[in-house]
Image (tube, rainbow, N blue to C red; front, side):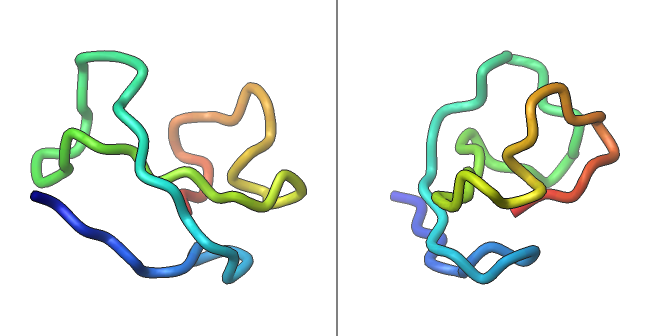
Length: 56
């Protein structure tokens, strides 16, 4: 089982792990889970963010 308890790198809020929305994972060492910041005002949660946008 995979655990990732690190806070968001952008705002420090708690992060939830959710399945990737697509099957394509662009990072060779990434996991099957996507880190999603729980802070709705965080820059990482902005709609339409680019692929090079900051990640939580």
